[in-house]
Image 1 (cartoon, rainbow, N blue to C red):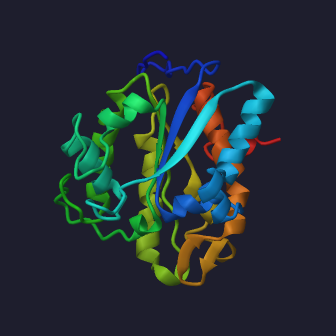
Image 2 (cartoon, one colour):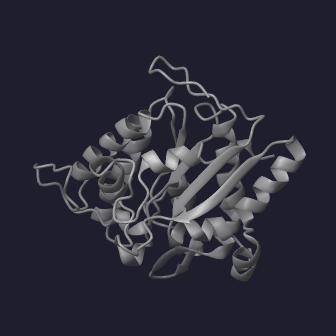
Length: 269
């Protein structure tokens, strides 16, 4: 692998060699990871719609892309929370060679994996109004805090230029479990992530999950939700987007991260 510069040359991965991929997630991510694969098969054989897609791609293209999923944070010695503050807290504020409250730091993860994928569950959209006093060390869900935490996370990820990172845009919330103000702030944040925070030529890429869930609207589409007040994706939706997620990963590995579709959709045949 090679480094990157802001001049526009993105890192390249030698896709002829084995590539180790870690997908860090909780329940929303599991909906996509599993898709329609029965959970007992995933537990027994480690297979999922994403993993099966990747296995088929490896066989057809003579590749060795090895993806595994990890619950992060685990909820054992660190709360079951994966919001901007939590990634910042574990990976930036408490960075180092040792785990923080039993959770692996980026120093640890990058020793084992070539590609690291991370995301937030849908409560990331429960965003409060700004106060005018942004605080990078605050757990309060506010745009002003999220932006500071994301800027620190970008700086941290760029300190590993021979690794690639894929960040999901946020999971959306069903209309009955949010309000127009929260929804507007959520869209504003992930628009900022796509148009300002994400920059071509570096080692950080996006998968636009928010667009797939909302199809341009302000809320998670009801037909994609588990229930009228449950913002977890339905298995059918997970199965629909799992191939797009897998394709996006392949595009990033093979150097199409800046030119390919953020959803993976345009790459599908």
